[in-house]
Image (cartoon, rainbow, N blue to C red; front, side, top):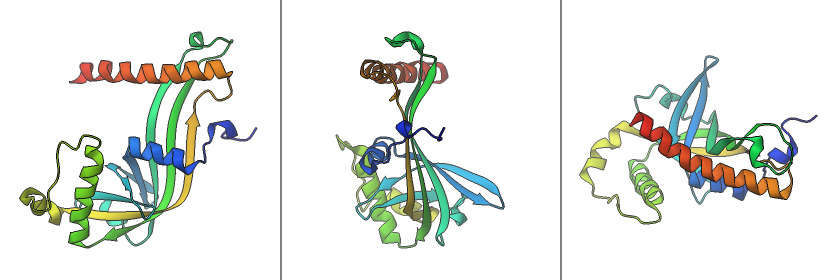
Length: 197
């Protein structure tokens, strides 16, 4: 049997872009001396087909985010356990999820002006759709942090969409699994936050 199953793979770039736009916080993975360095950063897909991000200059992963070094990214969408009791047919328990794996090469962008514009654009993207806050170009607090932030750009070399959504079930059961994913994620967020905050 081929792994992963073809029906759990989604190679539609537009579907993967929707995941990146809706869940922009990426797991950023670099390797140094055979050991992974991992950081979680929001990344924005720009009109040139590249991903743009920012990182604290003191982060130990920062030196690896330049010189066309290879990088791996994971974007995580919704996920949940699917109990057999939701289906109309006899099934076993499973776990549904949406993930996008990306490989690419990364380079540092050294222009302070580009960094500043990128921070403004990222804020604008993340503030959508209401745009209740605008990061202005003359913001003094932002200017004071520019020396401590490094900007980088990722050229994507490989896309892989892992959309495990009960696609091998009947149309009715696929719809039930989708509704369970929506319901569980909404309920789990409230329950989880109430326990830790």
